[in-house]
Image (cartoon, rainbow, N blue to C red):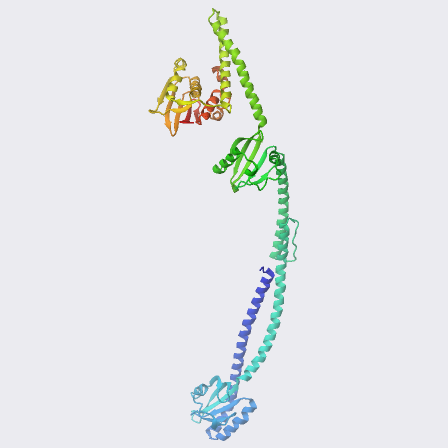
Length: 578
C-alpha cells in the first residue's frame, strides 16, 4: 500500500510530539509527587519541632494523661496523626487510637532512627489504620540531654495522592491542548512540505506523457523553490532537445525513406525491428517489423551471410539473387545489442551492363583473333622476302604491335573464361616441380639475354595436388614472365614446400618492386603501376588478374610482398584437393 509523503511527515511529527509529551508527563508526575512528599515531610518536621518542647515537658514530668489529651486535641485540628513513644517503644499517646491497644513501636524504622538522635522518616503501610502514611519521628530529650522518647507525626498519603491526582488532571488537560496545537501545526507544516512535492510529481507525470510545457510555481523561498526552478529549467531543456531530436528523426526518416536501397535492422534474435519503404516494395509486404527475417526472405545466401556476420562479429558483403534481380547485400554488425544492419543494393542493371561488356569483349576478341592471325601470317611471309632496311623496320614494327594485340586478345579471352560462373577445372594429378621445370624452359632465351639467374628449390617428397594443369601453367607463366620482365639483374628464386594441407609456391625476384599504395590494386583488370614502362614492355594489365582467378578457382590464396628497388615476392598456397 502506497503511503504519501504527507502521511509520513505528519506521522513522524505526531510520533515525536506524542513521545515527548509522554516522557514529559511521566517525568513531571514523578517530580510533582516527590516534591509534594518532600514538602509534606518538611512541614511535619517543622510542626514536630514546634510541638517537641511542650511534649518533652509533659513527658519529663510523667504527665502521660495530659500528653495523650494533647495529642487527641491537636491532631484532628491540624489533620495530622500525633504519636508519642517512650525509649522502650511503648506508645504513651496517640491522636487516633488508645495507647494501651497499640503494639510496641521500637522496630519501626523511623522510631529506630529517632532513638539514636536523628530525625527519622519513612513511608509505609500502617497496620493500625491500614493505610499508606508518611512518618516523621523527632527525638525528645530529657534534662540530662538523653533521649526521653520520640514524637512521631504522620500524614495520610491519600491526601497527598488526592492533591497530585487533581494536579495530574490539570497537567493532562494542558498537555492535551498543547499536543493538539502542535499536531495541528505539524499537519500544516506537513501539508506545506508535501504539496509542492505532490505538484512536482504530478508535473513529472505530465512531462512523461509528453506535456513539456508544465511549470511549477511555489511561494516558498527555500530548497523546494530551488527544486521547482530546476524542474522548470529541466522541462524547458527537455522540450528543446525533444524538438531537436524530433526534427533530426524526421530528417533521418526522410533520408531513409528516400534511399532506393532496401534497409533492414535485425535484433539479436533475428527479428526485424526497422525497415524502409524500399524493402517493403521489394518484398511486397507492408508490415515487416517484429517478424523473423527468415519468415519473409527465404534466401539461403542471405542466411549464410547473416550467420557469418553474427559468428565473426565482422562486416560482410555478398551478392544474392532474388525475384530475378541481383542484389549486393552489405551486412554490418552493431556491437551494442548485437544488431545487424543489412543494405540491399540492386545491381541488376550493373550486372546486365557487365554482361553486355563481357559479351562485347568476347565477341570483339573472337572477331579480332582471325584477322590478327592472318596479319601475322602475312608478316611472317614478308619476313622471308628480301626487304630493304626501311621496309624491314616497318615490318618489325607491325609485327610487334600485332603480337601485342594477339596477347591482349588471348588474355581477354582467358579472363572472360575464368570469370564465367560456369567455369570448370579439369582436375588431374599435377606434379608442381615437373610443371615448373617445363615452364622455365620457355623462358631460357629471355633469361640468358638479360643475364639473370633462375633457381628452383623444391622440398623432397613433395606431394602431388589435384589441379588444372593448363590453368596452373598459365598462372606460372604470367608470374615468371613478370619477374623476368621487371628484373634487370640479380636472381629469380622459386621454391616449393609442403604447407599444412597444401603446397606453397614462392616466386621472388630482385626487380624494380611495387610501391606500397599500388599493392591492393595490382590484381584488378588493366591496372598497371607504370603505364609508360608497361607500354614499352608490352604489358596488358591482365596477367595478375588471370593469376588471381586461377588461384581462387583452386580454392587457394595469393599474397604479395614488395618494396621499390628491393624486389617482389608472390606466395601462392594451393590445397592438395580443391
